[in-house]
Image (cartoon, rainbow, N blue to C red; front, side):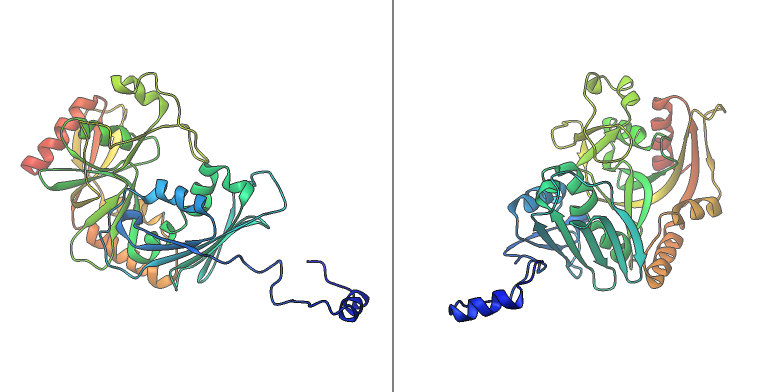
Length: 337
């Protein structure tokens, strides 16, 4: 901000010009626009000075219905003019308890207070024009609080049959999305293909996920005729994929939540005979704990939630044929073995 010189102030006073320094260029813009969303079913109040922010948030969370009556997440989104017309690089993240900082440059950054369940987001108008970048790196920030305060995140898909949920775990590329979608095509209920959130502070094992979208690796199109010929979905980050909304798919039964009765680690193309076998819970525990972050009390709660989750039976599914894998999971759910 450029300040007036003493001489300039003297001239203004001599000419009886009123000077008002109550607001400076570094002040954040007033946030007159407000809307409530429900990311993964949890209430979030968004305050901003730009309608485009609300439009992008609507695309991210507009299809989710309220499932929980928790303290609202508060996200203040300040859109500023900025000093560059270019989209900045991906943010760098730092955790300085209780704050989680994400900084791309001087005009694009976010500060999440994990203790107060609030996020302050500043984004330039130029960056906002890249909606994929803005949504992925900044406007999706309320999920930070979902994944630390209210739930325990697990890198897993989830499907359900006859009211019994199966959590599909495994490394990236193990086939979680493929198996989740294949089960849905076979009459299962689809909850999520890759990101599951286990609700904290409950006696059951309720998982919530994004049932409104499904993503595939490009090679998956060879397994499902309806995917052939589809172009890759533009993404701000991550591996190339085909992303589709589930609403237009008549064969998809979807639900935001499911109760987990079985945990299955997916092992496709293992080179071994196809089988479903009991799996080690210590390995499952460590695999799930890799994604935890937040305040010490939050991490303790995450560990407690994982212990409750691991009260379910844990298996490894070794398979090469997709139809065999679906049938074996169906038998597990209906026969318990």
